[in-house]
Image (tube, rainbow over all chains, first blue to last red):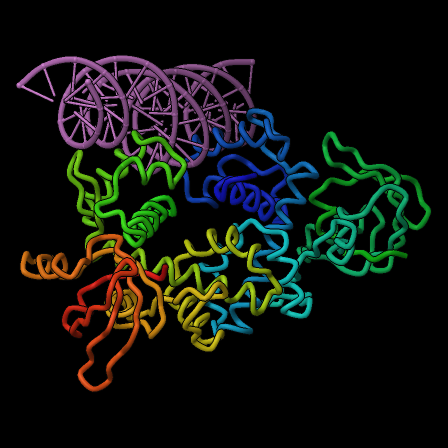
Length: 219
Length: 219
DNA sequence: ATATTTTTTTAGACTAACCTAAAATAATGA
DNA sequence: TCATTATTTTAGGTTAGTCTAAAAAAATAT
């Protein structure tokens, strides 16, 4: 079983990855957690041993599948508790966070299962953030950007998360526009690049940074 | 703010005092907490520094007023959470303890206040144990002395509130000592005297003043 | 009253999670 | 390319909470 501190590292790494840092640097992690980089390095070595993260010195960090699963469960617990505090205990939105930060580390399967039922299976927390589901399979709900799909999936572009001219110009240069059809030809685990074809045209290799900002749906 | 571990020491000391160990020995504390006596000694020194316990080497330990207050707050939280788990989350009596042991260490005044309201101010937990009130002190005194029990109750002496020689000599003269069994035979509304039997021996009539200083527990 | 046993404390060591300072590596830029 | 700067890691130290083994104190028994 993980300590609350280890869980917080996993959660912070997840949030930084989600925000586009890929991989997460030791410094950004240390800054987010308000600790020194040397302390982060220590912990990263240990989490790597436990197979929760991919870490090589000087190369930054990403989460393993197991690590991602744990991160999502912690966020699930956090958001369910926030829901409970606001809906049942008269907390206001700005009051919930500190308490939920403590409650998210309580270990009990049954507790969360029953809390979910008690709250009538909410899908969003009081701030409107989606509540990850208990099982990984149902996580499809969250799958909105290109990075969340797998080899062979046929998708269609429905929007972008970054609307800077730089990004849009780049998309245009590789033939991606709103409504463009995309097929995932290959996922490269090594550098997280993705090989795609657009509207049936020749293959294009895109980086994780580009993929993360491309909102798509199953086609 | 105390760590969960420090809180557990305080709680264990309180429970041992309540069960009649006065003062609590290092060994009994270590045994209850499933740690070695040397570890307990270390912690006792620290809690003594923090003015939560009275401790002198080789002399055992009792709680200060502050320590007692903290112990009761932890027990209050524990029992309120147990109530919540059983009443709202379909936990059975035997399932609640481990989870409540974790929840009792969450720090938030508002959380407990609101949980209490949400549960409609319960006075006993699912096992029938009294839930200490938020505005302590009185709770400790009132729930545990002889005057708060009713006809037919079987009790056992766990301590006294007045340790003057006068009082102790009197108790001795009517056959009351630590660990003496007491049964309440009759409560006289007229003059508040109480008819009791001690260790099954012939009846004794005691005054309200005597009863108020006799700390007992259900037997 | 003294010897034996039990209890408690001290001394020294370990782990997790942090720190600072210095060294190693990577990134930047002239 | 090479020097400078920024990032990351290593080395060594700290605190909380635990441990074992040995010493000290208290309790018990002869």
